[in-house]
Structure formats: structure tokens, C-alpha cells
Image (cartoon, rainbow, N blue to C red; front, side):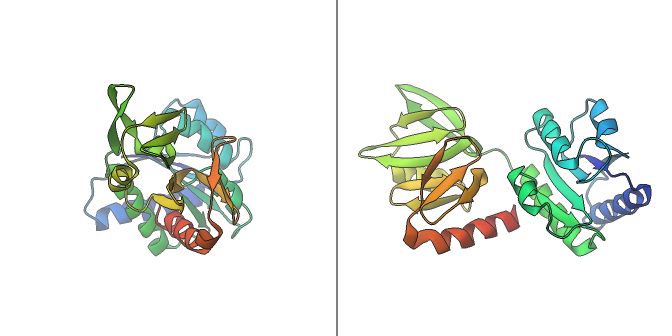
Length: 235
């Protein structure tokens, strides 16, 4: 496993590296490769890809959030831990940027361990691929790429990050094949992927793809809010 730490505080880098290695030893996992940089500019000069990144949000030059987007272009499965000395100042911006965890200094070992354990489980899990038939052709769709699935009479309409199409699979078949805990029935006959939700109101859910949104039943608002917050906590 390749890990990168980026922080302008050298003593913090040393401390965090020890904490990460302690977790891997405790879990009897192979020791990871850990690289460290004093700035995002220095890190990005090296055209390397990582599985996990620990990025200070405030550094001279490029910020941790901006750097996280560059790292995601190199590896879309990378999980980013944002490190900050501020409790919640950058919390909304961080989640909007799709970070995996938001950790405040001083780092709590138990909280770090919990985040690392969840991250390793997530990275170890294979991508959920679903075989569908579209226009008499069969091919796979990655569940992570799906925004929502909607029942339309006897077929379903599937909206992904790149297209919307009709599918012969029934709504119930989709419900049985989609990953448990990642999708929520926001309206009768509509499943929304929590991984792509960026904001919601009592009647509408917005995704991270511009202009792609769907309805949220008012009576399901409280349940959706609970499920979404739980999803974020476990991600």
C-alpha cells in the first residue's frame, strides 16, 4: 500500500508516520510505503499515485483540497484524509471535495485507527459491477458510476455520471443487486446513490454532477438525513 503525508510541520509528519505504522503493526498488516512532503507543490512534482493521502489543508502554495483533486485524477480510488488544526472551519468544503476523513490536530490514535481500518476494507473490496442489457447488447456498469435508478413502467431508467439510458432490468432486480447501504429510496420507484450526494433539501437531492438531481419525498427527509450522515461516518 502506498501512502503519502503532506504537511509543512516536520515534527507532525514524524508523529503521524509513527502512528500509521503502529496501526499496521497492531493489525499484523504488511508495512506500507510512506512518502512525506513539506508542501503540496513538492508532492505534485512527483508524478506518483497513492492509495491513501494525508494532506494538511493549509500549506504554503497549493492547498490540501486542491492537491486532493490532482491525486484523484491519478487514482480515482484514492482515499484522502484532510488534516487541520481547525475543528470544523473547512468541514463543508472538504466533504464537497469528496474527502474520506476529516481529522483535527492533535490526531487521536483511536480515531485514526478507525479511519484506517475502514479505508483498508474499502480499498480491498472489488468494484461492484452489474451486468445489464441495453439495446440488445450486454455490458457491465460500475455501481459507483450510477447516480440514480428510476422505475419507468415496465423498465428502468438509469442515470450515470456520463449518460442516461433505459434498461430491461426491473426495479426490484436493481434493488437486489446494488450495494447495500450505498443506495436510498428517496421517492417511490427512485434509488439514489449516496456516494454522489452533495446537498439536499426537503424535496430535492443534488449530486456532484452539475444539473443532475432527483426528488426527495418530504416524509422521507428525516430518514434520508440519518442514512446520509451514517453513510458519511462509515465511508
